[in-house]
Image (cartoon, rainbow, N blue to C red; front, side, top):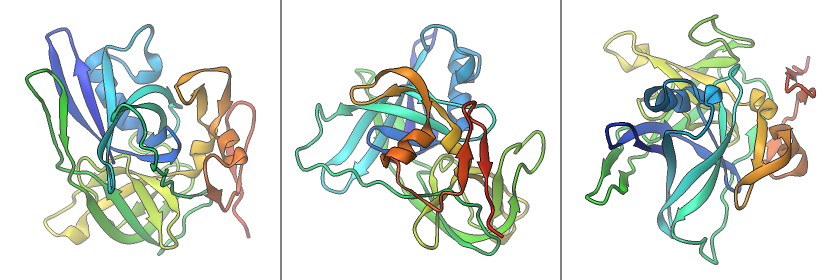
Length: 270
């Protein structure tokens, strides 16, 4: 599944490829925070949580459904915290006009536990996809899925550093490519344990590439201000943990606790 930017700036309209993402509940998508910040800074001059007033850009989310073909969703709201590299997006269906009668939400299960060194992982995303605007200014997206497998080499429980990766993450040998940022990272048992973050190429060999994955467990502390569908402002802000508790977001290994301020504490079993 691909997150694409259909943006209008002061010069005209243009299309900016962003990254990848995945549904975790009906109309709710997770992706990487830096993906959304990059387009916000380019078209609005600040990060998304600093925006005052109307956005100067729009974001589309496209999926290639095995039965219904390409479906496009418009991002209508978001849940955000600047302390982790995960953001939640509320979307509404743009194309087709309504959900097919036989449409079934295919949703992964999150693992809210700490990852383990030597654990097998599988990263999914859409690098090198095509993006263009047609004569009418409509976004045309060609999806190019990619899968990368590897193992976890190191765990950074709180952060790897204070600047580049100042949040819980882990290092993996699964080589990720540009455009995969925000895609899901699965454990060997099929649960989402992270979100594709950054990769650093250290040499000519694929074995020398280092990929970093944002841990998914802190995302339960994301504050949400909208509900769906249609996407409307919530009566009061609430945490993504509430959707986990209600079963709207599927999760196992629930070793997290969240206080009223959204601070997430992870219990690591002895």
